Image 1: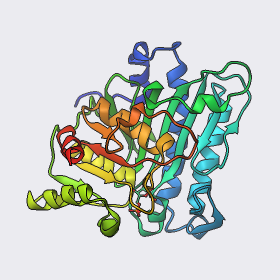
Image 2 (image 1 turned 180 degrees about the vertical axis):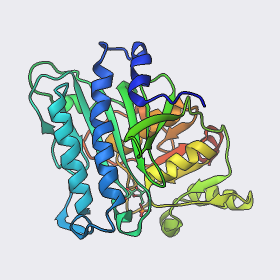
Image 3 (image 1 turned 90 degrees about the horizontal axis):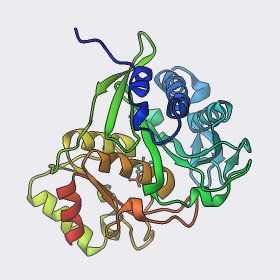
Length: 320
Ligand code: P6P
């Protein structure tokens, strides 16, 4: 049986690909690796632990009901990132403003600590999404400017998916690799080396409940998918939908609507990290007209329409 390669071994082996100092990537990813295991433990027993299920009773900056596990995951990731010393500040979906550590760290992180959390109570896969940027500011404290970099400036991006198995998928700009948590030893092991997404696909993921608010070109594209007998798959958990399409081929789209021209998804900690990963796997990600990674942000929680997945499908959707 081939020797299993752990995430730690893989990072050391590939450290030379990380533009910056040796060991920094390993430390940066360790927070997500460790906190990911702890979130996984809580997610897996959520049905048993009443105190961890259900709404927290508070709202996040998006005005969305915070689930208890959202808050647990957010606090845990922030604590882990603060303790490891190289991250100077974090922008999280769950926090209105930047969380500053004022430690002079060279990096900043954006994250959605638990995306799709409304699915927690119904046992559907959920995920953590994160981006890592090198600061453009100097001194002990990060500035908003550090978070207003385009997605092309990401030094690493990744997601954890808490599903039938728990995986960590990440890129540093040199391809995409997936690691599956072996719960018997509590270790992420390389299970999906050099992930590439099929150039075309036959799965489309969109919330057709918004049909009457879609622009004519979006409706025309969806009609075309139906005419071509594609499969409609929509989990309602972004990481799960994107992960499935990444492996099998397909497109996920959350277009703008009349009511919400910029759609629902957030640029900094949903679209950008997933766009970097999907592009590195050979796919494509746009807002319907512009490459996601080339959008210059102007606000922490700004939203963007998102068309992401197999290149041929995203190109087809944009032709409308
Ligand atoms: P809708 C979950 O709240 C989320 O941010 C993504 O995980 C998911 O893809 C999307 O929203 C679902 O939104 O409007 O289709 O329920």
